Length: 520
Image 1 (cartoon, helix red, strand yellow):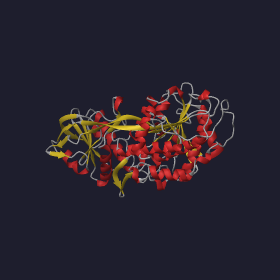
Image 2 (cartoon, helix red, strand yellow):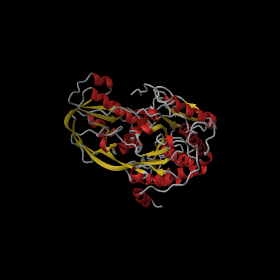
Image 3 (cartoon, one colour):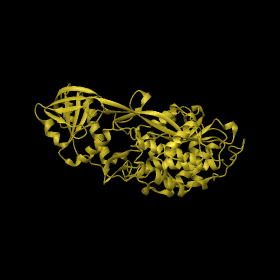
Image 4 (cartoon, helix red, strand yellow):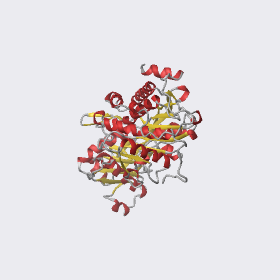
């Protein structure tokens, strides 16, 4: 069925599903101690390879939220969910749950000038935040933070140089080891210092070394998109530049802040230099959506207890070119999990468990966990009936024998039974060496706070995340299907399925640790 036909058909009525084999009968939940879940053979490398190359390939153009590319991916997931045998569990008897994504960006008609020199937004100057302002103030140049602390900057624009950033190689890659991200973060940190010192505006200028130009251009390409949020939420979500789901970052300074190319250094240092700005924002609204399907359980007494599998289908879309490639595919992030959920769905359809199982593919995760925030606030089943969330993010790379389970240790752990089920499934079936470092609250990346389980955990729903963690291709055009370890991805899928099978057939719903509260 063509994509538009599917949208139309699902808008009218629930699409038909296949007839599953019977699972545990009423009263049998939790009795079996068989370590092998009954439908492992439904999870195949061939299916996963086919799906990852379809969803993570160039034809999907990176699936950026708020674009037709995300809509195409959303429709593709819904088609595959129907093919897998899931019943629709979205709004109005369809597979879909639509909501409005709001994008706010600095207008291209904004005016920025230093003296008589007019600067071109996103070419000569990158806006580091999205502040509407009209100013005509003198510029004071300070060489560093020490000079800033000794200078009266009240009512003035403060210019500060940004030296070349040295990124130390690390055996364990982190996004803060990425040159572009590290440089943009350093620029925002300096802007925050200027705001805290009382400056009326912040001007960060690349030092004379033109090695910063690539980071400048990359930041311009990302930041010109603006900020994203849920239209009814009342304010934008995420860091400026459209990556709220990917990093904690620094709070945007409350004064207009700009990063200038290195060739503007003499301009801001000139005696009597003046900053004149008239910058303002504009807002757009786009549709984004979640895809939701369900496998009914076999025990009528447990029909109101749902196990929820969670992932996201969006990524970063078409952006600036790196080595001739401008499509940021997001094969690992997060097409791997999208196709893993399809495979797990096929397994539950083949052999249902005692409880119903929800599969939710969230939209706009990369814009600030927007799809999961929406579903957690507007679930298609009563929220109290969601007994566990098994989320995953990036499960197809790195060492073939290692993986991570987030939410498995305090203060992130909120359910003993859910974590024990995941550890038991791994011990009996997949035998991954479990990394525990990335789940610690002290880890630089704050990885626990950066994926779709978080809105559910904040509501006190038992939640964990499966991951194989970051790698040097993360959020670059090199995250392509050809780089995915299909065997490992299949193994991760089986681990997630086996964990869900244990929870689905347990005598009791998983506990919530008394007094659980995230540290922020």
